[in-house]
Image 1: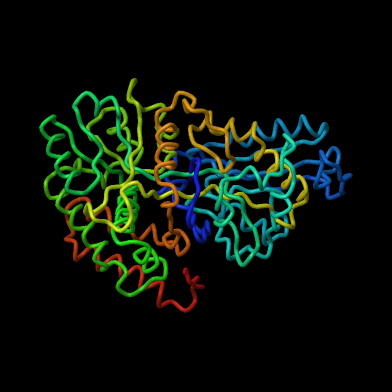
Image 2: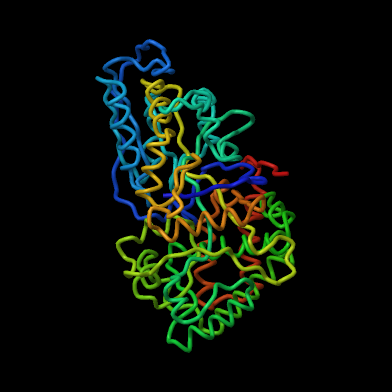
Length: 472
């Protein structure tokens, strides 16, 4: 699935984001999915229609649009909502929305055959590396320069910085639709009942863990496919502690990136919590949504790090009255270079329009409809997460405490919003999962964790066949 959310004024919102393997770790890859598949042929007309204010790309009358959507934590119904609306706007046009959980496996052959879909949600662990198809994708600048269904230029309706993740060498090859806030999630009702507050430092987290133990609860829980959610938490915490130089070292695959003092201080703090028995045992043998239910439904643990897709993903397995709420990641010390309120947030769920699609104009038009206020509001209301379109989340968050907390966190963070993409871009998550499951199991020392993560980084850095991107 993937995920992102908010009212923000970002400082360097995701310098680059190749959905080369959009994790769900942070999102998509681990989102609950139902298997499906893209259609094998679009069956669409290649004839052009008349261009007008209501049809800026010239969608042909009675044509068919073939859209293949990653079926992760967000499902595909939000695209179907836009498809239904598009069919109302363009009478006679048919929009086929097909689910997929294996985007690259199912669609790369279609690119090779010159018969790709007209629009793709290139998300999930099996996303197609953008670098492999960049020349086969439309520049989507025309979409954001078009008016939405309400008559406002789309570019003017978007949060600042959200186009950067999909821009490669000046080409807007993807428009990321969802806004994900990464945070420590907790039950506000449980915390209120016990007089607890979210920890602002790792020392406070340890103290909270002791209080949880007194109540027969763990501080954290994890599942085997989502062990790297704790790596995401650790990286965000280290960046806040040591500043942007920490992020740049990791992004640029430096030989000592995992040995940076800020990273080590977070690893050490996490190890102290692990050794104190504050992680519920058995996570490396537990399916990740089952583990998450131990937090959201059983309340065996009181904190869980995740992207903001977590509420929608667990909505059927969350205890009544839970009041899911997010808090920023803790820092290692109270003297961190970035404030506690600084936040890891990123635009995700990248939509692309292949140039060779039989109905490329239809693919662009479907994306235009998705970026209308009506469709974006529908996403926020049904998925309990914001899109990149501003002004679609009411003050009450549609009754979602999680959505309200995202707005508050983003407002408090101000310009202190950051993200990174080296894990996704270089496809490191699979190897890192093994390491983090062992670390959370208590089987690795901090030095072992550091060594193994650096080996994964060095392997990529020293592989001349892997195209590198320098981040500044």
